[in-house]
Image 1 (spheres, rainbow, N blue to C red):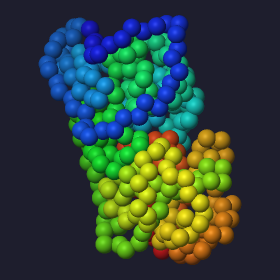
Image 2 (cartoon, rainbow, N blue to C red):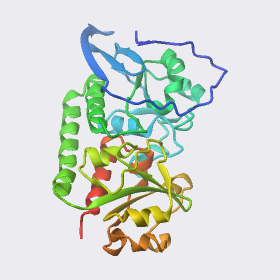
Image 3 (cartoon, rainbow, N blue to C red):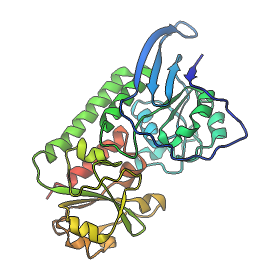
Image 4 (cartoon, one colour):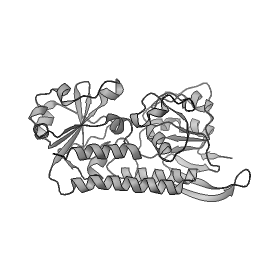
Length: 329
Protein backbone atom coordinates (compact mmCIF):
# COMPACT_ATOMS: atom_id res chain seq x y z
CA UNK A 1 0.00 0.00 0.00
CA UNK A 2 1.23 3.49 -0.85
CA UNK A 3 1.41 6.17 1.84
CA UNK A 4 2.11 9.89 1.80
CA UNK A 5 2.68 11.95 4.95
CA UNK A 6 1.14 14.31 5.90
CA UNK A 7 -2.26 13.57 4.31
CA UNK A 8 -5.55 15.45 4.29
CA UNK A 9 -9.08 14.45 3.37
CA UNK A 10 -9.94 14.60 -0.36
CA UNK A 11 -13.24 16.42 -0.92
CA UNK A 12 -14.84 15.20 -4.18
CA UNK A 13 -17.10 18.22 -4.59
CA UNK A 14 -15.22 21.23 -3.25
CA UNK A 15 -12.57 22.57 -5.63
CA UNK A 16 -10.23 25.00 -3.96
CA UNK A 17 -8.95 27.93 -6.01
CA UNK A 18 -5.27 27.53 -6.81
CA UNK A 19 -2.77 30.15 -5.68
CA UNK A 20 0.91 30.50 -6.38
CA UNK A 21 2.14 28.91 -3.18
CA UNK A 22 5.73 29.65 -3.91
CA UNK A 23 8.42 28.37 -1.59
CA UNK A 24 12.15 28.96 -1.38
CA UNK A 25 14.49 26.02 -1.16
CA UNK A 26 17.75 25.64 0.70
CA UNK A 27 18.32 21.88 0.55
CA UNK A 28 17.48 19.45 -2.28
CA UNK A 29 14.86 16.83 -1.53
CA UNK A 30 16.33 13.46 -0.70
CA UNK A 31 15.26 9.91 -1.50
CA UNK A 32 16.15 6.72 0.33
CA UNK A 33 15.24 3.15 -0.60
CA UNK A 34 14.29 0.24 1.66
CA UNK A 35 13.88 -3.24 0.10
CA UNK A 36 10.40 -4.72 0.48
CA UNK A 37 8.29 -7.32 -1.29
CA UNK A 38 5.42 -6.27 -3.53
CA UNK A 39 2.56 -8.41 -4.79
CA UNK A 40 4.05 -11.44 -6.52
CA UNK A 41 7.74 -12.23 -6.40
CA UNK A 42 9.17 -8.99 -7.83
CA UNK A 43 11.05 -7.00 -5.19
CA UNK A 44 10.73 -3.25 -4.99
CA UNK A 45 12.87 -1.03 -2.80
CA UNK A 46 10.38 1.28 -1.09
CA UNK A 47 11.44 4.88 -1.62
CA UNK A 48 11.12 7.60 1.02
CA UNK A 49 11.45 11.17 -0.27
CA UNK A 50 11.80 14.14 2.03
CA UNK A 51 10.74 17.49 0.58
CA UNK A 52 9.56 20.89 1.79
CA UNK A 53 5.95 19.78 2.24
CA UNK A 54 6.66 16.60 4.20
CA UNK A 55 7.81 13.02 3.68
CA UNK A 56 6.42 10.78 0.95
CA UNK A 57 6.73 7.00 1.06
CA UNK A 58 6.33 5.03 -2.19
CA UNK A 59 6.09 1.32 -1.46
CA UNK A 60 5.19 0.07 -4.95
CA UNK A 61 6.58 1.03 -8.33
CA UNK A 62 4.15 3.59 -9.80
CA UNK A 63 2.26 2.60 -12.92
CA UNK A 64 0.09 5.70 -13.39
CA UNK A 65 2.04 8.90 -12.76
CA UNK A 66 0.25 12.25 -13.02
CA UNK A 67 2.45 15.34 -13.42
CA UNK A 68 0.89 18.74 -12.68
CA UNK A 69 3.79 20.85 -13.94
CA UNK A 70 5.48 20.80 -17.35
CA UNK A 71 8.88 20.42 -15.72
CA UNK A 72 7.61 17.22 -14.12
CA UNK A 73 6.28 15.96 -17.45
CA UNK A 74 9.74 16.44 -18.90
CA UNK A 75 11.33 14.49 -16.03
CA UNK A 76 9.00 11.56 -16.74
CA UNK A 77 9.66 11.84 -20.46
CA UNK A 78 13.42 11.80 -19.88
CA UNK A 79 13.08 8.60 -17.86
CA UNK A 80 10.77 6.95 -20.42
CA UNK A 81 7.90 6.84 -17.93
CA UNK A 82 4.33 6.98 -19.25
CA UNK A 83 2.36 10.09 -18.28
CA UNK A 84 -1.14 9.15 -17.14
CA UNK A 85 -2.29 12.75 -16.72
CA UNK A 86 -1.08 16.34 -17.07
CA UNK A 87 -2.39 19.89 -17.59
CA UNK A 88 -2.64 20.70 -21.28
CA UNK A 89 -3.10 24.46 -21.24
CA UNK A 90 0.54 25.39 -21.93
CA UNK A 91 2.43 22.42 -23.35
CA UNK A 92 5.94 23.34 -24.60
CA UNK A 93 6.96 22.35 -28.10
CA UNK A 94 9.41 19.72 -26.88
CA UNK A 95 6.53 17.89 -25.17
CA UNK A 96 3.98 18.53 -27.93
CA UNK A 97 3.33 14.83 -28.55
CA UNK A 98 1.46 14.70 -25.22
CA UNK A 99 -0.98 17.43 -26.20
CA UNK A 100 -3.30 15.15 -28.15
CA UNK A 101 -2.21 11.86 -26.62
CA UNK A 102 -5.40 10.00 -25.74
CA UNK A 103 -3.69 7.87 -23.12
CA UNK A 104 -2.65 11.04 -21.25
CA UNK A 105 -5.61 12.64 -19.48
CA UNK A 106 -6.03 16.42 -19.45
CA UNK A 107 -6.24 17.39 -15.78
CA UNK A 108 -6.87 21.11 -16.16
CA UNK A 109 -4.37 23.96 -15.93
CA UNK A 110 -0.91 24.25 -14.45
CA UNK A 111 -1.88 26.86 -11.89
CA UNK A 112 -5.34 25.44 -11.17
CA UNK A 113 -5.50 21.67 -11.76
CA UNK A 114 -8.93 20.05 -11.87
CA UNK A 115 -8.85 17.78 -8.83
CA UNK A 116 -11.77 15.66 -10.01
CA UNK A 117 -9.93 14.93 -13.25
CA UNK A 118 -6.77 14.10 -11.34
CA UNK A 119 -8.75 11.62 -9.25
CA UNK A 120 -10.38 10.15 -12.36
CA UNK A 121 -6.94 9.48 -13.86
CA UNK A 122 -6.43 6.88 -11.08
CA UNK A 123 -2.90 8.03 -10.18
CA UNK A 124 -0.56 6.01 -8.00
CA UNK A 125 1.96 8.89 -8.00
CA UNK A 126 1.41 12.64 -8.33
CA UNK A 127 4.22 15.10 -9.06
CA UNK A 128 3.81 18.78 -8.16
CA UNK A 129 5.79 22.00 -7.74
CA UNK A 130 5.13 25.09 -5.64
CA UNK A 131 2.47 26.17 -8.15
CA UNK A 132 0.21 23.37 -6.92
CA UNK A 133 1.47 23.18 -3.33
CA UNK A 134 -1.78 24.42 -1.80
CA UNK A 135 -3.44 21.19 -3.00
CA UNK A 136 -0.85 18.91 -1.40
CA UNK A 137 -3.18 17.51 1.28
CA UNK A 138 -6.00 16.70 -1.14
CA UNK A 139 -3.65 15.18 -3.68
CA UNK A 140 -1.84 13.15 -1.02
CA UNK A 141 -5.10 11.48 -0.10
CA UNK A 142 -5.45 10.28 -3.70
CA UNK A 143 -1.91 8.96 -4.13
CA UNK A 144 1.66 9.51 -2.91
CA UNK A 145 2.51 13.09 -3.87
CA UNK A 146 6.05 14.40 -4.42
CA UNK A 147 6.85 18.11 -4.24
CA UNK A 148 9.71 19.32 -6.46
CA UNK A 149 11.39 21.94 -4.27
CA UNK A 150 12.45 24.26 -7.11
CA UNK A 151 12.09 27.96 -6.25
CA UNK A 152 10.48 29.89 -9.11
CA UNK A 153 11.12 33.22 -7.40
CA UNK A 154 14.85 32.92 -6.76
CA UNK A 155 16.94 30.30 -8.56
CA UNK A 156 20.30 31.83 -7.65
CA UNK A 157 21.27 29.04 -5.28
CA UNK A 158 20.86 25.32 -5.88
CA UNK A 159 18.73 25.40 -9.03
CA UNK A 160 20.81 22.99 -11.08
CA UNK A 161 21.54 20.84 -8.02
CA UNK A 162 17.80 20.48 -7.44
CA UNK A 163 17.18 19.38 -11.02
CA UNK A 164 19.91 16.73 -10.78
CA UNK A 165 18.68 15.57 -7.36
CA UNK A 166 15.10 15.28 -8.62
CA UNK A 167 16.28 13.17 -11.55
CA UNK A 168 18.08 10.87 -9.12
CA UNK A 169 15.03 10.66 -6.82
CA UNK A 170 12.68 9.76 -9.67
CA UNK A 171 15.24 7.24 -10.90
CA UNK A 172 14.94 5.55 -7.49
CA UNK A 173 11.15 5.72 -7.56
CA UNK A 174 10.82 4.11 -10.99
CA UNK A 175 13.77 1.74 -10.72
CA UNK A 176 15.65 3.62 -13.46
CA UNK A 177 18.74 4.64 -11.55
CA UNK A 178 21.16 3.97 -14.41
CA UNK A 179 19.13 6.03 -16.89
CA UNK A 180 18.81 8.83 -14.34
CA UNK A 181 22.60 8.89 -13.88
CA UNK A 182 23.04 9.06 -17.66
CA UNK A 183 20.64 12.01 -17.85
CA UNK A 184 22.45 13.80 -15.01
CA UNK A 185 25.78 13.29 -16.77
CA UNK A 186 24.35 14.62 -20.04
CA UNK A 187 22.98 17.67 -18.23
CA UNK A 188 26.32 18.34 -16.53
CA UNK A 189 28.08 18.16 -19.90
CA UNK A 190 25.58 20.59 -21.41
CA UNK A 191 25.98 23.09 -18.57
CA UNK A 192 29.76 22.83 -18.93
CA UNK A 193 29.38 24.02 -22.52
CA UNK A 194 27.92 27.29 -21.29
CA UNK A 195 30.55 27.76 -18.59
CA UNK A 196 33.31 27.12 -21.12
CA UNK A 197 31.88 29.90 -23.29
CA UNK A 198 31.22 32.45 -20.53
CA UNK A 199 34.46 31.86 -18.62
CA UNK A 200 36.69 34.97 -18.64
CA UNK A 201 34.35 36.80 -21.02
CA UNK A 202 33.81 40.49 -20.16
CA UNK A 203 30.34 40.87 -21.67
CA UNK A 204 27.54 41.88 -19.31
CA UNK A 205 24.06 40.55 -19.98
CA UNK A 206 20.51 41.58 -19.14
CA UNK A 207 17.55 39.20 -19.03
CA UNK A 208 14.20 40.90 -19.69
CA UNK A 209 10.64 39.67 -19.95
CA UNK A 210 8.42 41.21 -22.61
CA UNK A 211 4.71 41.38 -21.86
CA UNK A 212 2.47 43.28 -24.28
CA UNK A 213 4.96 46.07 -24.86
CA UNK A 214 6.18 46.36 -21.26
CA UNK A 215 9.45 45.03 -19.89
CA UNK A 216 10.70 43.65 -16.59
CA UNK A 217 14.26 42.73 -15.63
CA UNK A 218 15.70 39.75 -13.77
CA UNK A 219 18.83 39.92 -11.66
CA UNK A 220 20.96 37.48 -9.74
CA UNK A 221 18.23 36.84 -7.14
CA UNK A 222 15.33 36.03 -9.46
CA UNK A 223 13.75 33.15 -11.36
CA UNK A 224 16.69 33.41 -13.77
CA UNK A 225 19.37 33.72 -11.13
CA UNK A 226 20.86 30.40 -12.24
CA UNK A 227 21.80 32.03 -15.54
CA UNK A 228 24.34 34.09 -13.63
CA UNK A 229 25.19 31.69 -10.83
CA UNK A 230 25.37 28.34 -12.63
CA UNK A 231 26.16 29.38 -16.20
CA UNK A 232 28.66 32.14 -15.44
CA UNK A 233 26.88 35.02 -17.20
CA UNK A 234 27.90 38.44 -15.86
CA UNK A 235 24.90 40.66 -14.92
CA UNK A 236 24.51 44.09 -16.46
CA UNK A 237 22.58 45.49 -13.48
CA UNK A 238 22.24 44.99 -9.73
CA UNK A 239 18.50 44.25 -9.97
CA UNK A 240 17.46 42.31 -6.85
CA UNK A 241 13.79 41.58 -7.55
CA UNK A 242 12.65 38.06 -6.68
CA UNK A 243 9.16 38.17 -8.14
CA UNK A 244 7.89 35.74 -10.72
CA UNK A 245 7.68 38.42 -13.38
CA UNK A 246 10.74 40.47 -12.49
CA UNK A 247 11.15 44.14 -11.73
CA UNK A 248 9.18 46.44 -14.06
CA UNK A 249 11.55 48.60 -16.05
CA UNK A 250 11.40 51.19 -18.80
CA UNK A 251 13.14 51.28 -22.14
CA UNK A 252 15.31 54.04 -20.66
CA UNK A 253 16.45 51.59 -17.97
CA UNK A 254 17.62 49.14 -20.62
CA UNK A 255 19.33 51.94 -22.54
CA UNK A 256 21.18 53.14 -19.44
CA UNK A 257 22.16 49.61 -18.38
CA UNK A 258 23.55 49.26 -21.90
CA UNK A 259 24.04 45.48 -21.81
CA UNK A 260 26.48 43.79 -24.16
CA UNK A 261 24.02 40.91 -24.47
CA UNK A 262 20.25 41.14 -24.18
CA UNK A 263 18.12 38.03 -23.62
CA UNK A 264 14.43 38.67 -24.33
CA UNK A 265 11.77 36.29 -22.97
CA UNK A 266 8.55 36.89 -24.91
CA UNK A 267 5.81 36.09 -22.38
CA UNK A 268 3.14 37.44 -24.71
CA UNK A 269 4.01 34.81 -27.31
CA UNK A 270 3.39 32.08 -24.73
CA UNK A 271 0.32 33.41 -22.96
CA UNK A 272 -1.51 34.62 -26.07
CA UNK A 273 -0.16 31.97 -28.46
CA UNK A 274 1.34 34.60 -30.75
CA UNK A 275 4.39 34.31 -33.01
CA UNK A 276 7.67 34.99 -31.25
CA UNK A 277 8.79 38.61 -31.55
CA UNK A 278 11.86 39.44 -33.62
CA UNK A 279 14.24 42.36 -33.99
CA UNK A 280 12.00 43.71 -36.76
CA UNK A 281 8.80 43.51 -34.71
CA UNK A 282 10.33 44.90 -31.50
CA UNK A 283 11.25 48.21 -33.08
CA UNK A 284 12.17 50.06 -29.87
CA UNK A 285 14.47 53.03 -30.64
CA UNK A 286 16.04 53.12 -27.17
CA UNK A 287 16.91 49.43 -27.24
CA UNK A 288 18.54 49.98 -30.61
CA UNK A 289 21.06 52.27 -28.89
CA UNK A 290 22.46 49.50 -26.67
CA UNK A 291 25.71 47.69 -27.37
CA UNK A 292 23.75 44.46 -27.55
CA UNK A 293 21.62 45.75 -30.41
CA UNK A 294 24.48 47.42 -32.25
CA UNK A 295 26.53 44.21 -32.14
CA UNK A 296 23.62 41.90 -33.02
CA UNK A 297 23.63 40.25 -29.63
CA UNK A 298 19.93 40.46 -28.85
CA UNK A 299 18.67 36.90 -28.36
CA UNK A 300 14.94 36.21 -28.53
CA UNK A 301 15.04 33.06 -26.44
CA UNK A 302 12.82 30.00 -26.50
CA UNK A 303 10.01 31.29 -24.23
CA UNK A 304 8.56 27.84 -23.59
CA UNK A 305 11.88 26.62 -22.23
CA UNK A 306 12.54 29.80 -20.24
CA UNK A 307 9.02 30.70 -19.05
CA UNK A 308 6.79 27.60 -19.11
CA UNK A 309 9.47 25.27 -17.73
CA UNK A 310 13.06 26.32 -16.93
CA UNK A 311 13.70 23.60 -14.31
CA UNK A 312 13.94 20.35 -16.25
CA UNK A 313 16.66 18.59 -18.27
CA UNK A 314 15.32 19.54 -21.70
CA UNK A 315 14.50 23.14 -20.82
CA UNK A 316 17.93 23.69 -19.25
CA UNK A 317 19.60 22.32 -22.37
CA UNK A 318 17.60 24.73 -24.55
CA UNK A 319 18.42 27.62 -22.21
CA UNK A 320 22.12 26.79 -22.49
CA UNK A 321 21.83 26.96 -26.29
CA UNK A 322 20.21 30.39 -26.05
CA UNK A 323 22.82 31.66 -23.59
CA UNK A 324 25.63 30.58 -25.89
CA UNK A 325 24.02 32.41 -28.83
CA UNK A 326 24.58 35.68 -26.98
CA UNK A 327 28.35 35.19 -27.07
CA UNK A 328 28.56 34.28 -30.73
CA UNK A 329 29.65 36.91 -33.29
